[in-house]
Length: 277
Ligand SMILES: NC(=O)c1ccc[n+]([C@@H]2O[C@H](COP(=O)([O-])OP(=O)(O)OC[C@H]3O[C@@H](n4cnc5c(N)ncnc54)[C@H](OP(=O)(O)O)[C@@H]3O)[C@@H](O)[C@H]2O)c1
Image (cartoon, rainbow, N blue to C red; front, side, top):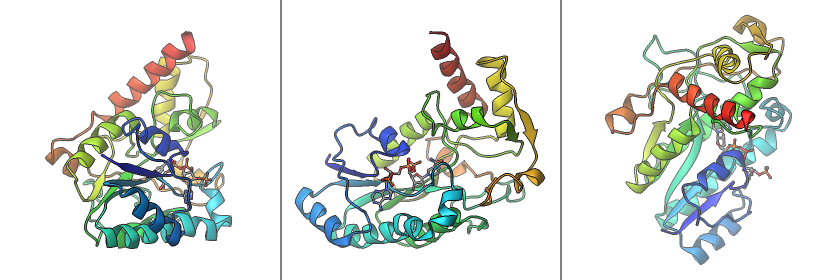
């Protein structure tokens, strides 16, 4: 299967290459319609994966001060892909985010078709805008991740980020274990699934609880304090979404992931073994 992947140098793009190692990885701007069209006509891919986007460095606060760049990559680019891939009837996959919601939706978690209810950061707004448009069109698989983590030492891994914080937020969230995500994403792509999927592990956990497990499993000397949601505003520029997504759709289709605490423990065990080696 001929696969083209955009954003292949990024954190998630690199991980996606593990399941599509033979994918073509052009380094063109996805918002440049002419280049995208030429590439598609030349390569005639069966599947296109869009892992390109601006998430901000060192974090999403960057997007508040770089709105045009963020808009170009997170909205204009996906719209160009929508048009060019749509014209050619090519199946494609778009990486989206659960950070378009806040809260737990009355304990039910947000389902795939619940309207976004969080607009506290420019990044979140761009992700919601593109989602709302793309989900109205056929032939697109929209995968919503949240705070992806694994047992690696990649600085973009959630656990590696949390390790650096002296104060860690204690708010329950849905999270995505990257190894579990890759298994489910591959299965969905192979069956050419379309529409929106919440790609998170069932159950909830807080970043603070993750660091407590980190202290238990990886480093008993690690020091950090609890940060409450009320205190968060004083620490960050853009708002941060804290939310719980429903995993019912994925489970109904036989692709549910393991519970989140189990996945976190697994990732931490991997980190612990690596640090002792
Ligand atoms: N990591 C997360 O926490 C997370 C959570 C939920 C959803 N997601 C979504 O997953 C996707 C990938 O995120 P990531 O964490 O892998 O981000 P990343 O590490 O910043 O990688 C994104 C990649 O896309 C490239 N890119 C940006 N704008 C582009 C454009 N206009 N045309 C072509 N390539 C472009 C970037 O290149 P440059 O570095 O040169 O800009 C980079 O290589 C994004 O859509 C993001 O919203 C990520």
